[in-house]
Every structure is written in C-alpha cells, then in structure tokens.
Length: 367
Ligand code: M6R
Image 1: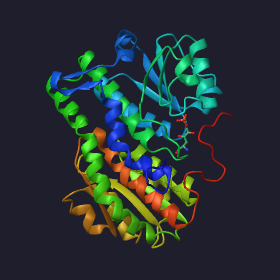
Image 2 (image 1 turned 30 degrees about the horizontal axis):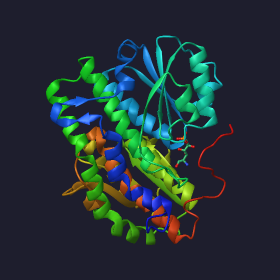
Image 3 (image 1 turned 30 degrees about the vertical axis):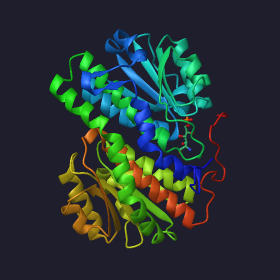
C-alpha cells in the first residue's frame, strides 16, 4: 500500500503532481478561462461583501492559511486575518455576521479548529471549510466549503495536503479577485495558465531534487539546529519547512521572515548553523540577497532554494537547490517540495520513525 515507497510520507510527496491536479480537476478550466467552485459561487456575495475573512487552523494548515492571506489580499483585496484556532477560541474575538471564517484542516477533526468554528458560527459568521477528509466533522458543520481532494494522507507530517490547500486557496483568491473586479482579465488568464502548469513543475522539481536532497541530507544528520528564511509568500513556506524538519527528525528548527534576522536570530549564526533560504527570482530577490550577505559574513552554512540559472545567491551558498520559475504567489508550492524531501531524508538518515513521529498523532482531537 506504500506503492513501493519506503514510507507513506515519501509516497505522498511523490503524489503531489497528481494530488494538485486532482484538486484543480473540474474547477480550473483554462480553455474557457474560468474557475468553477460551487462552494464559493453559491455564496459569492457573502465573500464580496465581507468586512474581513478570518482564517483559522493549526500546524501546517495554519501555514497554508498565511499564504492564503497573501493571496486573497493581493488578488481579491479583501482584508484577511489568520489565527491559530487555539488562540482564537479563547480570547473572546470580535466576530460579526459580516465576517467570513475559513477553517483549513486536512483531517477535518482537529479539536481546536472545530471549537473555534463553533464559536464563530454562534456569533453569526459565515463559516467555510477547506478540508481534505470528506464528510469529516468540520466539513459537516460548515455552511459551505471546498474539499482539497488530495486523497488519503497517512504520514503524520502533512505534505500533499499542504500543497492541495495552497492550490485551493489560489483558486479562491483568483476567483474572488476576478469576480469583484480587482484582478484584470489579462492577469487572471496568465495566473490560471501558470496554476495549470503546477503539476508539471512539481514533477520537474521532484525529479531534479530527489537525489540532491539526499546528498545534502547526509551532511546534516548531526545538526542540532536549523533556520529557515523566506520573504513574502515564502515566509510561510519557511515556517512550513522548519515544521517538517522538527516534527520528523527532532532537530530544532525555526522559520523566520528573512528581514527579522537582524532583530534577534542573527545572534545564533556561526559556522555550525545551517540556514535554508528560499530565494526565487520573483519576490523581494534583492532584499534576500542582502540578507544572505549578512549570513555569509557570519559564516552560516547556506542551503539556498533558487530558480534555475540563479547566480547572486547561488555564489554565496554552500548548497544550491534549483526550482523552476513560476509566479511569486505559487512559488511556495514548488519551493516546499525539496524542503519536504530534505526533512524526510534527514529524518530517515537519523533512523527516525518518519511516518509516526514520537508524541504526534495524525489528527489532534484533543485540545
Ligand atoms: O488535520 P489538520 O490540518 O487540522 O491538522 C493540523 C495540524 O495538526 C497538522 O497540520 C500538524 O501540524 C501536522 N503534523 C504537520 O505536518
């Protein structure tokens, strides 16, 4: 049932070209230039007239939510807030019937997310679910929703569900932006063509980085700390890269917006600190270059995720992982794949139980 792979996690990483395709199937019709999503369309006025959208989630799904915030604010120009479900539910949040609350959950069973949704519903918000497991508790209590259709995810570390969540959030942002007139037709058409190409780009990045990430992983089996840095859309991708590493390899890892380095974490950098930097060409590249220079000056070990043909960041890096170019807003989808592989192989080489890490459960049904 692992389809010839050693672990479910590796199988699920390799399923991503297909799972992202499945998420878009029947929704993204490039030839007609349309995105069809009944859950959104049936309630489009709610979204259009919302005072704000609040995204609630935990863990990896929360990271997807942060990218959702960037997507929806950029393309639909609707204010978005993203909160940990556990914090939201206990702080007496201000919610009105003009708010739309989106819960993101792979399992659809996460206790905190469920409780936060109930609270939002009681206070009159329209509640929307982005779940992977069909007919799960969250899918059932929401007013409407969109399934990610990534297929069953068995590995405790979320991989294909994450990229499916990003795909759904992209579709929602583009659909709303097109509908409310904030996203012009030409840009909409070019973005949907790019999204349509995503399964091929994931396939490409899997092929191009599978062996490479194994080689890099071998050099970091003894690491005790890692930093992951990114800016813009790739800041949440850095958080997600760090979470993957810590949960399966038990190496302490932190994700940071690259510009926050100088506000503290830079003090940690010396020749023993591995730093993963996500630096695709589109998206604050020049700013990232100067962040990399600061790290280089302090002798940090740089693992750079860059676009093919990159020179500036690559020249300073100790390890270079090349990914295909795409629109900035979709770059976390391709950038996440080699980071999943890197975390996977570091954990495997450390002899960890990758599919069932200690102390963790696939769905956290207690608060
Ligand atoms: O099923 P959910 O998406 O609601 O789960 C949320 C988190 O528990 C989950 O993403 C967790 O952080 C994963 N183990 C991350 O890989």
